[in-house]
Image (cartoon, rainbow, N blue to C red; front, side, top):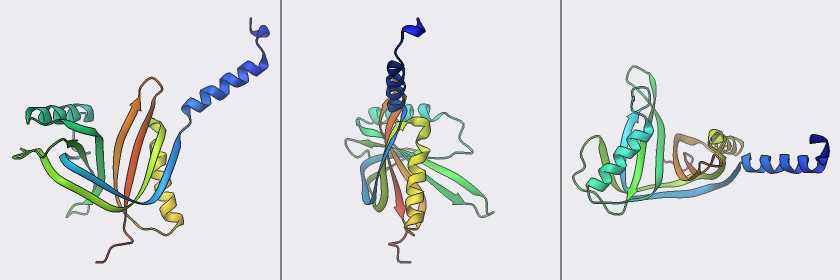
Length: 182
């Protein structure tokens, strides 16, 4: 049966399967991130044992119990810190925006009415989830090639996910350090 198949058909099929796997990254060198009514949960990645999906579900439940609704997708804020002993640790905050401000938030949560991060390098990533690192790499390479210092933190907004195709859409913001006056 394979000998009845046209070579052209095989080539078209290969191209089509490659197109569904390939990703796309669009970059903007100056963008402001603004989040409102944001519930946050901090964690140290080395010390955290609960799965991220469980923690997100707990945050969503907490929002509902407090009489609010989640607005928009999950946001992940990542940054490094150095202890007094000189040890480097990666820290992350999970963030969810709500339809209104939640008062009297208990630990391990915190609430911000507005988070505004001006002057970021931004990119929109569309492609396989396991290739998301290329969005961070593209921003870092762009910053390097253009002599733009970065603060070393990132905000990742998981805009959409298609489990059937194994793709996601994510917005990545990295804060520039060239506008600082210390």
